[in-house]
Length: 317
Image 1 (cartoon, rainbow, N blue to C red):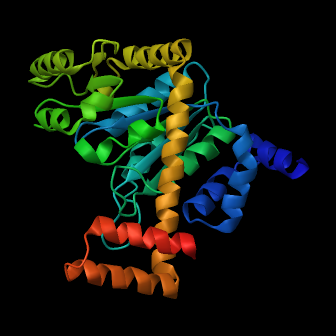
Image 2 (cartoon, rainbow, N blue to C red):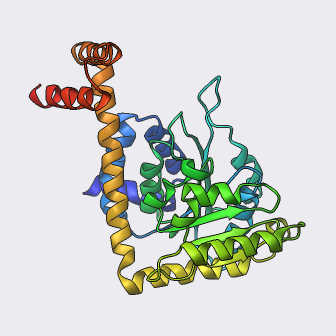
């Protein structure tokens, strides 16, 4: 336990190089990083994880930058994890969010990390949850996770975050798509950013009507807030809404339930990843996988039957 305490002390401020180094090791699935995370995991479960998702052009990064500035006024530390689309050439992150948030680079109470989605659907990278655990153990009480995509590609964030924010903007034409995909159904707070633009009032009215009609009677009314992030307008109200939602989760016991669901989802993601590697890396399993795909192609079995067969083979060794 001495080693764990020493690592925790260094992570929480005595050595500023530890956090970025561990983040890189964990993202690259380096055994050293995963072992460190294992020892740090007992110190997690304290952070408020806020997911922020929405279509490109809605101003999520500017909104986050303003929100970070507002949170820092209360002297609370903030970690930002921006999941960028993977480069089609290198597989690396675009890193646009880190560039846009450089104004915070001299603030030791703010840590910004961009990571590539690496082809994973659902708006999150494989190691997103593990980096959230790392930031949690590092003592960040607020962790903001910006996800890639919109619609169905963005709803996975609700499984990880305790508070999910859907960001829309007037004139993008994505509000109806967001409604169809279920993105608004998982949102705890809806933000219409760039509210100084033409059409903002109409967008708010459509969203309000739609949410009121679709929302179950037992669920609290979803707040719809207007912001202009670049000017800082509406950011105080957004920060208050986030804090109020967290308090509501604590009072109702929903916070504990959401954390359980988040861990269940993470275990299932890790299990799927492990199964996929088992099927493609080991020569014997890879051969079984190829044979099963061939049988599906020949029409001898359905994909579901092939999955069941492969599961039985994995279980029997």
